[in-house]
Length: 456
Image (cartoon, rainbow, N blue to C red):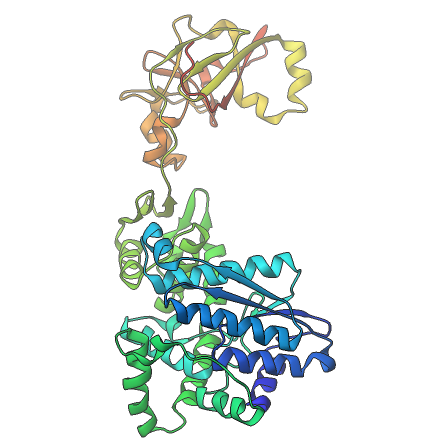
């Protein structure tokens, strides 16, 4: 075991000279062997070693027995131990998830917090090649994709797994050779958990076919991780190349290899805080080719329209009602604070040299209709872009500007009837623009405010 573990440490660059390592120590054979192995490297690598233990309070006296065993073991090794005692079952009910998932989340959160508190460089967990094989089989039964076949990564961020190339049998042999004591979790002996069924019923059958079954799965995991890394690199580059104003050009996405497209969609959704299932990937690929929308979470959708793919979160607050035009004093409409300031042309010309946005928000004061109001888009609105000699429906202009339909009600306008004088983020109409004859400019500034209940 020691040779294989050391080979993994070297191969994956798990440890550096002078590292501080905290070990996830359950008290079982795997974690006790891991701790002993790391302590054997203390002098060679000048390691500082500590341990973490989580008492999940799921097995009554047995859980307390494990905690006491770990405390005595760390005292014997003269290393610090950090313990979290928590009611996982109650926390799982609170989070509305299974106990196994909840326990895992609590463990890793505790490991990370402890590592941060003691400035540890690495967190070592005792996952073995046997654990990896069981994980791959478990993922296979759930219909996992290539990522599931990668199994348990040897290194993830600062988490390292030196025993990832070692079988459980080799761990137990190591404990016997070195006279290491350990405790046994009684639930590992039962077959009413899916992972235990795989361990006690499925794996022995595969071993009959191939005595080196765990090693074969480890090789598969490594090759799949290499392939997935390459596909991910291609997908990341393709995502950058498909980037367009407001989203991603689906015409570029449609030309991608299907495996690259699938990985690209996974990467894109991860960037937006969305975890995909296999069924979601197929639905997303369908709308890439045919258009449409897929709702992935209550507040997040992926939409393909106008040759663009967009990830849409909850739409911005719509502008409700209208506000009469006022000068030199703030006015409020929905979540917008608006200020319209007058300035003479000399002042305007000086300021516009240093403020390029000024041009898009400055109107000829004398050309603004007295009945103009601030509001959002309405049916029949029209706009005359500067210097183009045309008037077009505002709906068509928003299409050209690729403003998504769900965001249009939040765009602030200054309008007189159906004629739009100014659009926030786009600019001023031909009828109200600044010219050489302008004597007074009216400059509009609009910003969001947290208070949506202010009146005009």
